[in-house]
Length: 109
Image 1 (cartoon, helix red, strand yellow):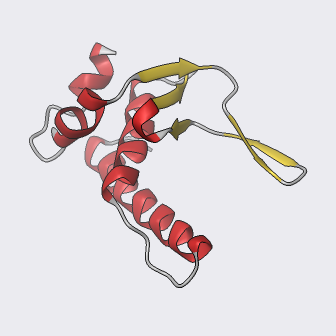
Image 2: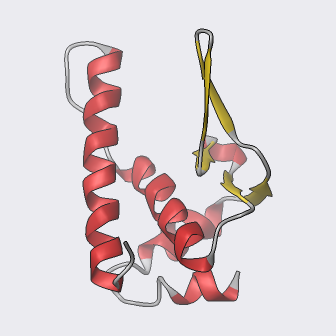
Image 3: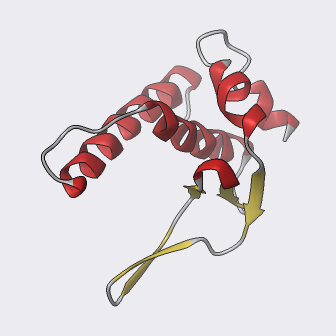
């Protein structure tokens, strides 16, 4: 976890630890999956709100950091749209763009 914490020492991203991770439990989990109808697909992480964040245990520090960034971004991002589905899609798009900016800044692909 120390390697992951070091990724957020930059003042632009210290909020990840100060505002998000310091208030949540972080779990390491195997085989995180999402179910949609009869389909199942793997997840890197899951933000369970007040219950905490689960991160796939097979992640490197950089991958775990990216996943934690992504899940913490959900706490500060609101989607726009007329339906819950539209709002979710908009929020997910905004989170993915912000996560990718962080990955580019740190040189992670």
